[in-house]
Length: 254
Ligand code: F6R
Image 1: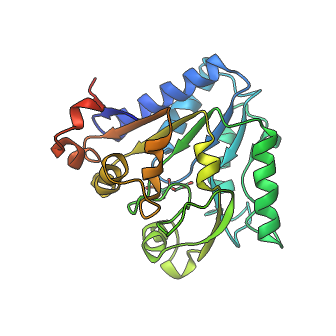
Image 2: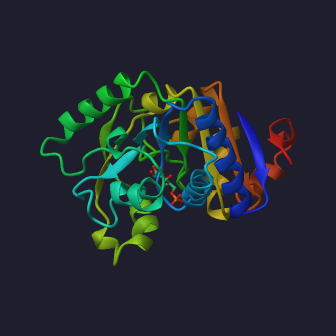
């Protein structure tokens, strides 16, 4: 794990945008694993600017998103398909047929999960997986639990996650109770992982993920076992790590 310190959200977003752009430049037909939520919005803005400036080309890029709410259609303005179209896909020259988000309305969600695993397998691996992190250490919607779930699966969202995501809905009651999410093995199979963290609310989860035991109780801690993880975190998210005696061996200031 390498942790790069960013001054603030904008700095984190610029650094992340540069790294993802470098991936696209080096492999124009790369498979990108993408995330939703507040964290990557700034990085997506950077990619849109770079694409508009002619610096990067999405025409051969394929993508797989981490997750989708169960019960929401892609047209629902809080669905993750809608989020991706709105925050990235509608503004770059990506072929939407090459973009994948689990179908939240699938009649048979278990079959949809197996289909999604097959989509990922057919892509021959994710080149760069972008991740945010939940305040409880979740990645994708892999919530703290007793075992690391391997493949795409249906998950019951924790009350904490529903409360945290209620800011996007009219009320917490409207936040779906379930989601379809890639599993830990899907994420760990990515060639490179880029995790972004911003704000004090992520400080404990980030600290535990980097320095605590590897445990499904802190799902992001499994990333300690991946051999190519880059974390870009702003100072607010780094507060607890800065207090750790070993942080200098892992944090790169620039
Ligand atoms: C989103 C996702 C989640 C978020 C996490 C952080 O696709 O899988 O794991 O990355 O909940 O959300 P934000 O960025 O809104 O703090």
